[in-house]
Length: 125
Image 1 (cartoon, rainbow, N blue to C red):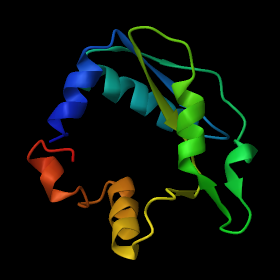
Image 2 (image 1 turned 180 degrees about the vertical axis):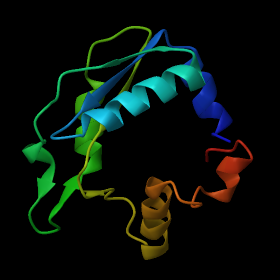
Image 3 (image 1 turned 30 degrees about the vertical axis):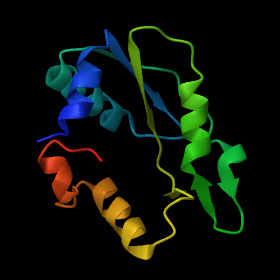
């Protein structure tokens, strides 16, 4: 089950645009396009591939700052459209300094039985 709040917000959009960063396999993008279209009853399109965002790279951590990428996506001028950025990079969230929080997010990102328990009840907080 997905977080109910996420379902509601996506359902209000007319379409979803997937924006790949760097080399994402075409079969993965097509799979996402088909599945997301069926799950959310939206017109899902795949945009042109964007270069890997070097402005978000932190050489000390050897990781990419996720918030900088999200800010770039947030500034795309669209109406009635949701944007989903897809990356195959090692991302970090600066506010997650606690190792248990970091591990929880990494596990959640893998999609393998690691969804936070409160999300299963529809609470995204």
